[in-house]
Image (tube, rainbow, N blue to C red):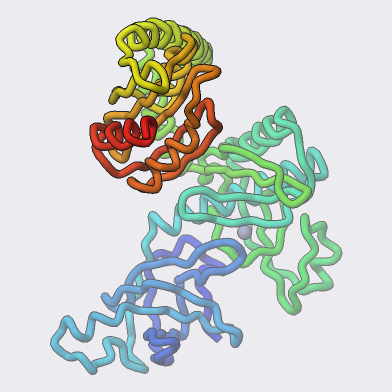
Length: 406
Ligand SMILES: [Zn+2]
């Protein structure tokens, strides 16, 4: 079994050890040591990275036999021009260095989690059922849902404990001793338990790494919450992550307030006003478009050419489907008219319409066009529309004219 130095000294950043085994597992080189400061992924806390004798450690895994497996980068031997050389040999003394900023970040988040979970437990009897320390944010899942005001109370209480800078002690106890102590969550582990004791606030069995005093957490900030599996999932940031989160939000907010020329507190009102303005403008725009279609329609109807079937308006128009349709409706509002309107865009949109009583079937004309030029559409004898026709407007209009007058 590997001697885990972080159990008793989580602040140990560098150490010396002897290589016990070097193996290939699942295509990766793993190194086992007699002792290590490297933390393997477990209990919601991710692994440490760093170097062993100058070789990069890229993953650390806990195996079933209690060994800590250091997965090391393979390219090192090759870089030295010894493709088959094992960079680390059994029996060799190596110096290990862990990536301290990464580890300390994990310690801040993990200790913060103990304090935050204890605050929810003590104030509201809301138990933490799960914890995840992610690359950007961490989450705890509470067994039941709390109101925003209660979440704020627990957050304040947790930060009071942080700012009182209470000691965070590591204690060991066997299962029987642990039973007599009041652990926040009963442990299912056999043998010696490692307990994390936040003075007069929280006692939990945990194998992770923690700061030595609560002040090291810096701050605990709850970022968001949502309903989750009958309870609640809360995202939180501690210490350096809380500062990074604050900076990111500050930059986003300052960009937004700059655009709107308002202060941060005026933002919601300013956005509401913008949305209301946009809605009004859209309504006014639609009314104007309809008004315009009526005038253009009347104008086009006046210039229609006389045919055996009625007064025909066959035109290419720069408009979308809605625009073509309202224009066609406006033309055929006058008696005795037929409208064939094709968009200038390709593939083309087509609207065919006729006034009441005119002997033309708009849907039949449209079917002739789609069978010739592709696309799809349909409608009724008085109005039909289609899209996706692959031809220039001029050609579509010629074929429509032929179909109408045949
Ligand atoms: Zn812990």
